[in-house]
Image 1 (spheres, rainbow over the protein chains, first blue to last red):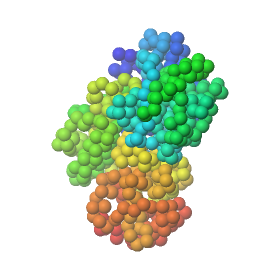
Image 2 (spheres, rainbow over the protein chains, first blue to last red; image 1 turned 180 degrees about the vertical axis):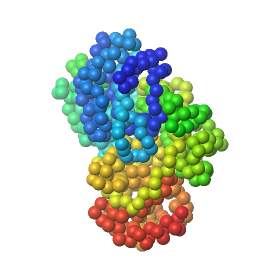
Image 3 (cartoon, rainbow over the protein chains, first blue to last red; image 1 turned 45 degrees about the vertical axis):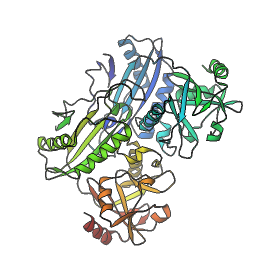
Image 4 (cartoon, rainbow over the protein chains, first blue to last red; image 1 turned 90 degrees about the horizontal axis):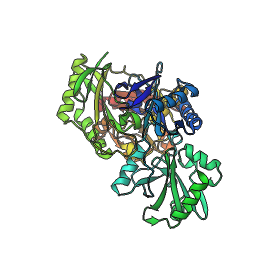
Length: 266
Length: 266
């Protein structure tokens, strides 16, 4: 059992109830953030809350709480579960409503915060380029962290079926976008690069941190360029993972380069 | 208040509880069907259940019930709510799970059936081609009725903001796919046509019925062809709606042709 924060109250998860008419459940109509807590403090909380508000603006979704209230709630969930380090999740949906695609009438958004143990630091990974699905760079969803995660789930299931650890997604034009739930950073032709937002890369919080650090720059990545990758790693709010191979291509520069990059980036 | 069927039991909707960890809520990991009930009978139930199973197969999502059980449950919800005619909804999700994109461990799917009043028959509509979003024909989601409905919600919100009744979605290549929650059938150059599945049209149940009737055939529809539309209507499981205009183009043949078509199709 664990304690969650639901619409302003700390409750046991077994007592927390999502309405079957919640548009988060019926239509995936909402957003979320995954936040790493370190020593009782939600890391990069201001960036996560800013991204949540940007997404809410795009979806026309009211946020019923101030940043201070949400930060206090995040810390409250950590304390109630006696977590110092944890994976926090903040979910915001358009709340319960009658059927229909267009939201009509008053909105009573649902806000939920949960906490779980941090996943173990993952070892180097073998990733494959997904065949089954492309990321849609022609949708605002490519730019916000929405509840519509099925494309990533399909890609991850394909990777697992092929014996791989994760999948990389191309966009509809065939350019690299990201991994199923992480930014990808690659060492190509002597420089560290990551796909641009316009190609369907989610504006990840760790991606922002890495780019500001100026050791990595944005570059459109074709399949041909991907084949010249010397080293690469995935990064998201919960951590990073170096890559051993992409499809059948072993990354020969992996170990030394990635260690160097991670030292300078984190 | 109304009665819903949740995982095998009829319960008051106020008592029905979705677990906050349900992957339908956290990741949109599930499917649904909207089914019209007429005189106590769910229309085209076999087609709806077959489509649900196709979607479940694509997502690797177990269906815990036989078609007979689901049909009985659909009728049970109608009876418990004293509905003869209604809009039924059957939702299937991957159920509660720990965090993570890849589903791991045992799956306890959530199956929910709800009923609501049928929407009033809508008058002729003015629709606009969405600018804000394109439908991703490179995702299996284009072919299944998943819970990932945000692209349609974004398109409908755009249409409402522009004063229109609904939005048409182009695919990423710029060919017409469908309306936000309906198949579109158009009279172009003397023939009734509808976009092919390969262009991102959802294989709608009413779409299937209309095509089998052979009065309509599949055709790739460019923006240029769309501008030659003489008459058009939208169709989904809850009914049909003739179109008055697409963007700024009034459909001059609308009334007579659509009446004729609807007489032969339904």
